[in-house]
Image (tube, rainbow, N blue to C red):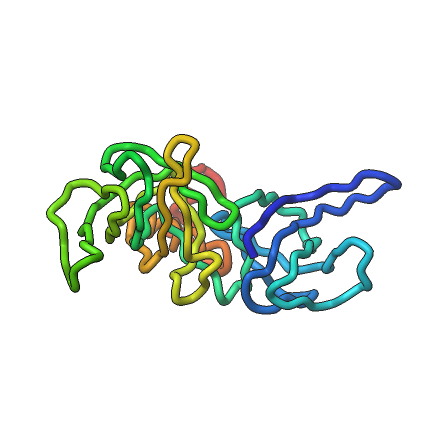
Length: 229
């Protein structure tokens, strides 16, 4: 579920923080352990909320709803809530098929805006793999840019890490649009996650967030360094 908004109510001593959005796939039950990506924060679902609805303990895909959590973690619009064992991809680089409809060409070295589910962030072409001639079978164009009505295979790079799914796993979180200035200039689907410089750091952080990891500094070394037992 992409997080659409976080609501708070303060009247009559109501201290709930409700995480709201539309469930795109799966089912959520009270007590489920969930993770928010890309922040990698985890907690459990405390309650399912709705306006003028009967209390419920589970809810399916297709519903717009809200949740309260067992811990007061800080999450914002653009995060993806998922079951802990089915976390989405997270990266600053993603491989995609793009169709370009903008008046100006899609070029390397220039910043655009990527809108993917509820997140919006700066994006640019990291690598232009090929521009496809849609009128020819397996036709490729020798271009260094993506022109109007061209289809291209590209690696995009975002300014900040984003959470997403491959198009084969989830359409709602695997497709996007690209904005040039104030105009929607292109759209595409995500076909693969690409490695970036933060991959190892993210993997280590996720491992330490969910499991106890023995530190590299021994007790004896720490005592010697700090001058105490």
